[in-house]
Amino acid sequence: EGAINRIAAGEVVERPASAVKELVENAIDAGAHRIAIDIADGGKTLIRVTDDGCGIAPGDLALALLRHATSKIDGSDLLNIHTFGFRGEALPSLGAVGRLSLTSRAAGHEAAEIAVTGGRTDPVKPAALRSGTVAELRDLFFATPARLKFMRSDRAEMQAISDTVKRLAMAEPGVGFTLRDVSGGGEGRITFRADSENGDLFDALHARLARILGREFAENALKIDATRDGIRLFGYAALPTYSRGAAVAQYLFVNGRPVRDKMLTGALRAAYFDFLSRDRHPAAALFIDCDPTLVDVNVHPAKSEVRFRDPGIARGLIVSALRAGLAEAGH
Ligand code: ADP
Ligand code: MG
Image (tube, rainbow, N blue to C red; front, side):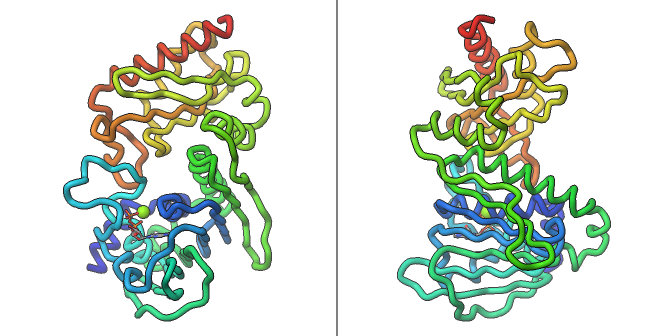
């Protein structure tokens, strides 16, 4: 079991940012309104995610660390996954490659804590916490020195963590996020903060994008909202005049999950083809929502690829909706 977890861990956890992604997704799944992420040394020595979500009852703590134990799907539901989490791989994997502790309190229960180090789980013990969950991962990859060597500088790993947190924050404008660098101890330094946004879907998203991508993006962004064949595309895409020299400002989400996908970025490029020179890239934050059975986002646990049952529909929707938006804006 320990060896299996270590092998699975290599798939799920490639670097500190992937551990952050798993822990923050769990906090989102738990219905958190505020999520605090504390990082030391690029996530190599400490990743701590604190949420105010539903918490875990003491009797379920050990279960949370078991491989393939998930509270989010049952066997009949594998094709119908609405939440981010899947297959119950994340926590056992993290517990196999680092020192993981979960402190949690669910409504109507006492707070409790469980720790797992290099795949070895300690018994559940009482703890002090008012509500929610604190997941703490220390010394990532201490048990697999070969992996340690693949990690980049603290700065580069922190940058990747920041990018991951910002992507997740774009998809959840109603949730407040604080990312803090606590290297060297103490209060640390806030490196990213986005308070929970109010208002309808578009107002909240617009405000969140202004916060993350900057006011200039927000002021030059076209609102996109189109539905075809049961697939909805919505979000904001920048006017061609606000384009970038690199394709860094392209954020795509499928059913709330950040994805990187060549077909989707290709469709984005095609929509702007007439308006951008070859070395300019459109900036956009676009969300595709569809019936989960029309898309497979679980191609690989750590990868953010997607596979549409009919890629042509998604591509056509992106191209036509963006072209219509651009035409309406006078292009
Ligand atoms: P998955 O997210 O796929 O279910 P994980 O290994 O990430 O698998 O988590 C296992 C289980 O632990 C979850 O299904 C959930 O019940 C519980 N859990 C993990 N993190 C949290 C959290 N922050 N708040 C509440 N429950 C959590
Ligand atoms: Mg999970």
